Length: 273
Image (cartoon, rainbow, N blue to C red; front, side, top):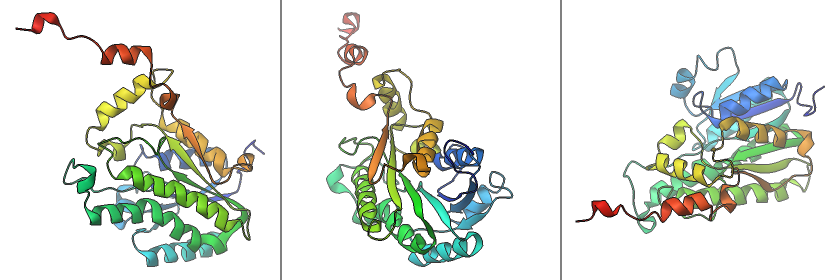
């Protein structure tokens, strides 16, 4: 029996898109710990695109924008696997098709769609799976390292992620009335994923945030997976309704001497007319 005691536990992982996905790294790590991993992807097209990656694995289709599909997912997984010991919610969506916009010009439909998929879905998923969750199950959602930053290129997704974190806290309280099910978030700093590549100007933000870490090295996806798997295990039994921040010190290193020097570097006098 390993330290995390995940052998034979059934865990649903929602959100695998490709080999760079946070969800995929979590699933791999769970498998290494002996857990039975069940996969949920957003569409039949996604199921086909991940067929090679998820070959011979139990894969279900669920578009979380559709409440009926969430209900059906819970019924199908419950029927096929019985008790669930964990759920990983690694789902987020934002429509940046119109490019950068000032926050006050955010499109209502875009904001509500992003909220439904990225935040409210964790409530509906948890509710649908409640009859199938082990009394000591753990639900883990993937968020972001800081909910107070006002990154222009992240736009309306920052308040949407804040809604996700708040929802996790309220779920922890709500489920505590009659279960021991725990709800937590993993809150990583910038990562190299396919999803992040779709954020305008993300590469520059990634390089800047890397400079702010103590180790001058950005977070890697495996580190996020390690934290998520810990939260899914009974070894994190004292953690409920909280967020585990992983940013290698970025959030408390605003006045790093190297970054200040780079920001205040005087212009080359030779370039002046």
